[in-house]
Image (cartoon, rainbow, N blue to C red):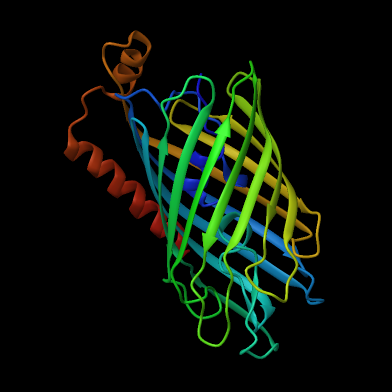
Length: 309
């Protein structure tokens, strides 16, 4: 079994803490699948500012896996209760640590709206000794004022993992190059995470990890936190996850909690592989493009309707 516990999750929800262990070998050249996801998170703390900052986010995502290539997109809807000079940037699961904008007043205010669109890509190396993936992401400035910097960010990174029976240790590093808004400068940052994924039973897996992220602004401390995840496969197509975390530094939230669901629209594999042929039979095998597109469009419409409620 090959598992890419962080890169796959990172490309789905833009952060390692949302990672999910996969039971199918991504490196099999004939494999293909498409997935839709919905996640939600609540975070609270003062991040070293001395002021309470609360954030609630819901994120819709899509991912396509074909052989060794993974493509993804995600878009959050965020609500923030914080001083006006605090820019969330998505925060936590969905972005960089918070940023303080020195050009804005510190008057407390509530903001909500669509956040920044994130597009990602990853490539899984054809190695046997260790699972290795390289990934990149671009954040496009689609968020309203106060929910993003208004600039495009770029990130690149790599992850290594190794399955040791039911346990998979992993580690990753990400280098982010944020765009600097008018009036203040944001520096390039390094972030990393190390942890363990473990199979806990039939269709159940867990993850615990330590994460570190440099602050892009000079006025805030770096972020250190410990995160946990529990995932269960409800069916062959649907998985549900519960997420939690606790801050270990002033620049981190005091606590966070969330959930995530992933729905497999379709999966397709080489018919020459007996086990994968069984998957093809279950999922409809050679599904025609029009049928698949209708499924994706209906699921996307349902996600949009849910987020508008």
